Image 1 (cartoon, helix red, strand yellow):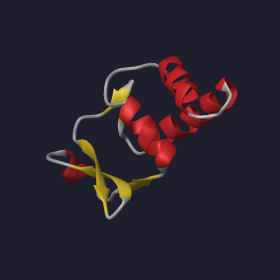
Image 2 (cartoon, one colour):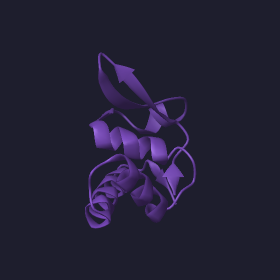
Image 3 (spheres, one colour):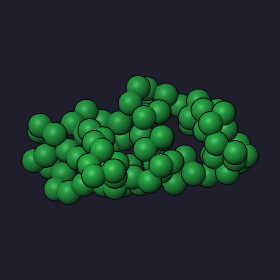
Length: 88
């Protein structure tokens, strides 16, 4: 899974914001604000990856159990799926 083409993460006034670019801007009307962990997950999903690979990276960087990391990755990818931002 990975982020669909046409979406970019930008730092605007200290906040991480996802905005549509190009053709995606015609279909996705809005933007998404990411917290620190959301921005980390987004960066992991720039290239094709798996949930297990993301969980491994999260556990290496943050003080969190693999179970909690997995739950957080599931929530984030569900949000992306619901908004049409995830290629699987």
